[in-house]
Image 1 (tube, rainbow over the protein chains, first blue to last red):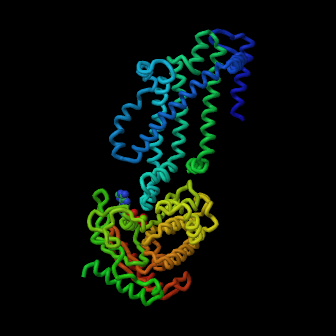
Image 2: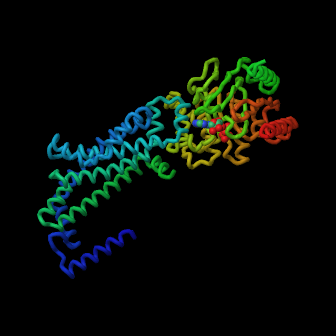
Image 3: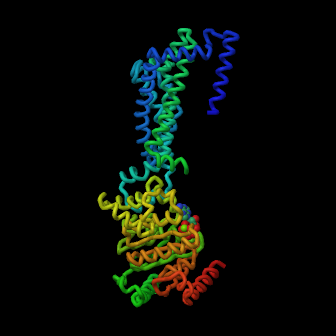
Length: 249
Length: 283
Ligand SMILES: Nc1ncnc2c1ncn2[C@@H]1O[C@H](COP(=O)(O)OP(=O)(O)OP(=O)(O)O)[C@@H](O)[C@H]1O
Ligand SMILES: [Mg+2]
């Protein structure tokens, strides 16, 4: 709760400043008018439409990129030769910013849902891949030996030892990727794609509505925060025990 | 007489002793050793770790291995487990060279914390071995309960490893190994991290369980008294490179007892002899 003191004080101060000097203009808006605009946008459905586009691309991209990242991460984490084979190509591809793919995706898919999805998926792929590989590498060698001594088959090894042992870190990767995915989705919308929360911010700015612009930013913040909070909640509910154990050690 | 023959002769002597001792009911199945090291050498990145190991271990024998840190005790154990392959020579188990881990050889690792699955309960950890052996789901609960009972964890089945003391965790690991119904149990300083009281308690528990199941045990320790107390035979390794320095037959009556066995003049004589030997070889 103490964390809320500073922003509240700052907002009140800002509101007083706005009222004393009257800073309403094309670039700035007082906190109260921002809140009003945010509220109206929520009531008239603007927020719902925009958020459902942005969230569905984020989740879709997370699902596609995350699955691919998980599978490849497992593969290179478990099979040394494949790791050596792919490391160079992967290290070469990784620094290419996801948004640099916008022109290519635009060429292939045009504007709309699919091009955004592909770019988000590319962005989510990396954190999951890297965390999966690290998670597999981080499994104590003793557990590998235990599974060898018990003569567990490859499927049982992955399912009963490697995945549960890696789970806490995999979930960190998932939350990281979700954050990255949301950022990329909004960026793509601001840059080109005329849908979603990012576009709503752009649109408000271009129609000289700073109150609405900040209002939509407020919504992006709230949605991003809730998304992460939801994942944390899911993590505790789904894997309670395993996640806890991992977090403690 | 080669070292191997010497070892066999010792083994034979040992089995006579066993036969006339309290172990008659176990019945020595054959004079043929269960595990044999033939001229085993092992190099790690160009460094010789084990040099010409010749050793044989009989069925139902309890062998303890002692030696200074880094002399290759763990490495020897891992060779029997099939977790490592020798650079030259071979390890024969049940008449066949060891190429990979076998289901009826179990390892109790020293670092029980790392060897247990923290996300599974005590019962779940034991279950892992049963699942691996393909025991049907319906049979598992009874077997698990019996195994936990055997190591004195009968009422802690639902506890997670992090909720158990060190001694309990090590007993849990032993229970999981017993679930494999192993013919050979390899134990790498299993009680090294435990206090003296817990240690003695677990020593007796292991002796009792082994006596019931007739398992062959290869037990690494650097506690000489522990070695004498448990073993039929104590093998002393010397370092740089690791090799068999001396083998001591332990002719103490069984069942052993923490008080009377440790006060037995023969126990004291052996302790003196092995201490002297270790001191000399380290000087
Ligand atoms: N993976 C490895 N790579 C290279 N050298 C190794 C490796 N494992 C062990 N060694 C070396 O092999 C030698 C024997 O090691 P080992 O672990 O068998 O000793 P130990 O007798 O069990 O010692 P301790 O009593 O400390 O457990 C040591 O000198 C060690 O440095
Ligand atoms: Mg060791």
